[in-house]
Amino acid sequence: MADRAHRLKKRAEFLKVASRGRKVPSPGLVLQALGRDDSDPARIGFTVTKKVGNAVVRNRTRRRLREAVRVVEREEPLNGVDLVLIGRDGTRGRTFAALVGDLRRTLRKAGVRGAE
Image 1 (cartoon, one colour):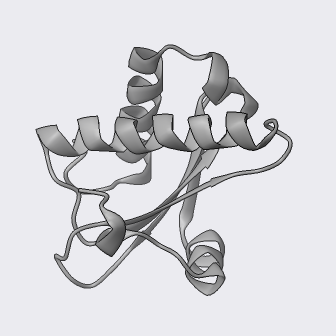
Image 2 (image 1 turned 30 degrees about the vertical axis):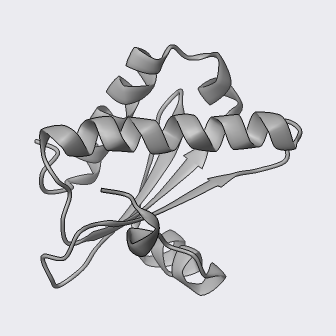
């Protein structure tokens, strides 16, 4: 689960995933994934730029992304990977079901184990 212990928090962690990982865009989000050499739970970071809106909108977007990850992880846990989910302007207007579908599709395209 994407609880606080399994979050990417430091800028260096986000940059490592961005530079070495695989980037998969979708209408509702952009996923960056970097595999690790362990089977520990996925570490997940969420980011939403100011282009998306003010703080209220950005926080709502982040909450929707976190909940989408929870829904996907309930079905099958994600392990051995660092993920960065980038909220887009389109995240706000997408239905939650479409957002979860976007996440599943991007995980599959990125080749993340547990998302098949």
